[in-house]
Image 1 (spheres, rainbow over the protein chains, first blue to last red):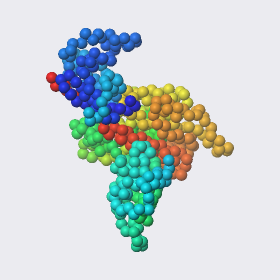
Image 2 (cartoon, helix red, strand yellow):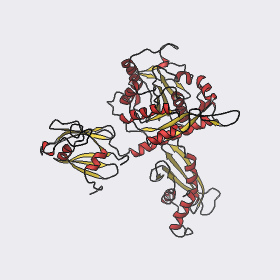
Image 3 (tube, helix red, strand yellow):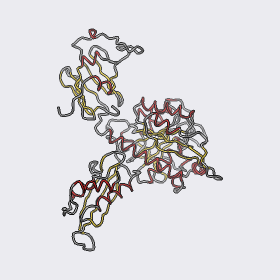
Image 4 (cartoon, helix red, strand yellow):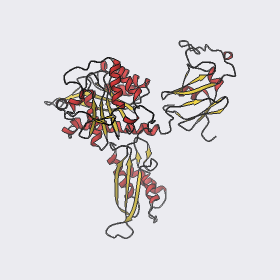
Length: 104
Length: 394
């Protein structure tokens, strides 16, 4: 996970984000899961790293509005519940979902 | 494994070398696959460097003998291993049956980033600039401008088209160091930069009166820098070297936000008190997502003219240490030299005034290392989606 970055980003279905990485691997990420795993300081305690956000706080109907790159190392998601402070580093995203090889 | 071992292995693994092989472009290309680019870690055929393969009957009419001529197009004219690659190509070709002579021409087209969006405010000025290299330091007085000048001149000497922007608004030293006495001329809505030895130069020192201080608050300084990046006719350049002011302030931020900076070269002296500020400079570039190309150490040592002993006046090895700490390349060390100081004061870039000196070759090797790092960066970023925005469809 030295310099692996995003090669392409797509919406796979109404609730799945697809990322093709520069090493050819693919991730399919459930957007509700992404909202529940938001790494921002309001959702995960900065000092204790204990989650502050409870899974039931996030409705299953939450969806992104827009996904944007942050520098060369991360992306941010604006959710339709108004939450937009999470910066998802590429490393974090790679760790969140099982990877599939290209061409699957 | 050496090149000859690889050639031998290739032929022996395929069985008998005595068997007559038809000599065609495919045979030639396959033979060249043993030649690796040491920076990009791929062979020169896969990298698409080999062009214009021509096979003709050998002069002198030797039966069944051929001359193979081809071109190897590298990613930068400043490639430090150009001669080594050429020799390896010749050896690989000569090992082919039926080849009696070779003609390998080394050329280069500098790779650059993706073209700028035409709507960009810097498109008119920087649209044809392939790479922008920031020369920065945490601390002042470490030889940043001297490094910037000699880096620019070394790159230009190797055949690249180079520009040098002096972004040190408050202490512009480039005009003195390059004997720049011409002013800028207007060219339409843009300003045409003057040239010294073929290097295009722009500095705040060209305006205003010599000896008088530039007294500006932050927003004014930022506006001047923005003009240098958006209203100067830089034209077609392989490298635009930007001599940053020291520190991590307003101007550094403005440049990095305004121009698509390819990467940064950090200059430092070896002692700990300088390294503290280097770490801050590296951290600034990491925050701004400008890749750090590597660290150059200046004033590394002084060679005594009486005893030829190296004296490590500012301690030893600091530059290499800080580079490895941050996982960036160590680009080289420049020794202390009275002649370098004198040449800078007299406005003679040392790499041209003292071509054969150890300091000049140290600068040339730094320039080669910088060019290599830029090429590696482009190879790594080939498939990277740099800036993206995806609207979710409901």
